[in-house]
Image (cartoon, rainbow, N blue to C red):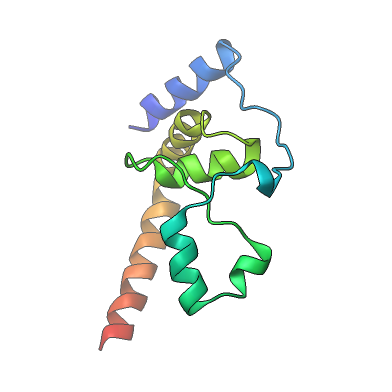
Length: 112
């Protein structure tokens, strides 16, 4: 898997696939997620003073879509972000495995 990850990274570099420039996103240009606003209004209204819960496509890529929206002002870079995350995990599999194992042991300790 490491070789595949290195190959993907090399292809991205060869074809000059770049992420867009990071921009400052204006909250006025973000579509707010209504259900989240209702929930936050009831349980944590102070969050709405600083943040806008963004409405992103709910197709299983919502984490990467939200990061793309926060960094670049649009969701379109979610595919590159997901690919780069997968490549990073594959290139650093030992570290990722140790992190998951540590997290799981903390969860088990908390549940007991």
